[in-house]
Length: 399
Image 1 (cartoon, rainbow, N blue to C red):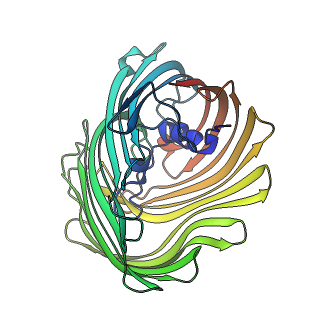
Image 2 (image 1 turned 60 degrees about the vertical axis):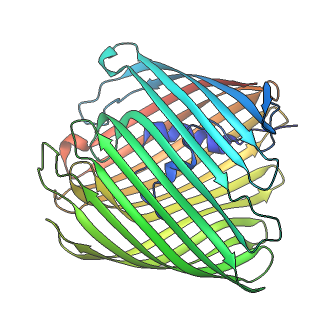
């Protein structure tokens, strides 16, 4: 039976609640999820076949109760409804794979109608069309998205428009050794605040320890800039980040898979901030603890750039669990911690997050569910010291 990856669907929902602005690797990780309201682990049959691929229409209806729609101490609550139709072209035939999506998120608030929005998105992900025995492999993506949501660095609802493009490659030079590189660019504009741009590139070596496990080391160069158009701070960010990273990818231990890396970054500030050093951490791991229970770990420590023209040290850890109760019911839960340290404004936030959810599969094309997300944010600034509870009820149909 086809089963939806409910954990990834919950990531999509939590992304709406707490937008992730960390530039892990070269570009924002959210581009891996752009346009997606769920991930399908086995392909659906589309309603129309074209060019050896399938057209699939994904439609999600979502109702959300939000106890703090601006994530501030003077909280106001509201109920809003979203309809998210998305057209997807999926092609696995031939040497390369193609995943193209376009859609719109139409959301209406019950009380605060000024926050109503229609956000469009489009993305294209392509794997290199090479033969199976080629030493070269990799992917390319380009994406454009609009997002109207709370920004946890600004603690207000903003509308942003983002364009991103990137590629990553792996070239095997011998049975055990491969060269790896990645390039990426992201341009983001935020209404009434500064836009930000990120240019990045990395080059490294990967050692194929076994068929299921590889170790790697990378040198990463990344440029972070802001426009300096923020009406509050009125300054500009221009950082050059040099980083050395060491990591592993694949099956790290029996039944534990994913990627983990650690590194050191030197940031040269060429504008209004000071140079600094930072220990980098990143991990995305899954552990098949029991036949029906999977545990997950996500952690990251990186420098972020706020649309208020300020760099921010972001540290996050999230531990999750997914339990398949039976063929139709999946239970999920997670607990996490987030720390934000703002370099200039003398602000530090410590947030504790917990959530739980349930998903019910009616058929291979139709599923529904609900989840609860709670955030307790303690801040050194009184106006950003807040609690938040969010309840999502959703249904999704694909054909």
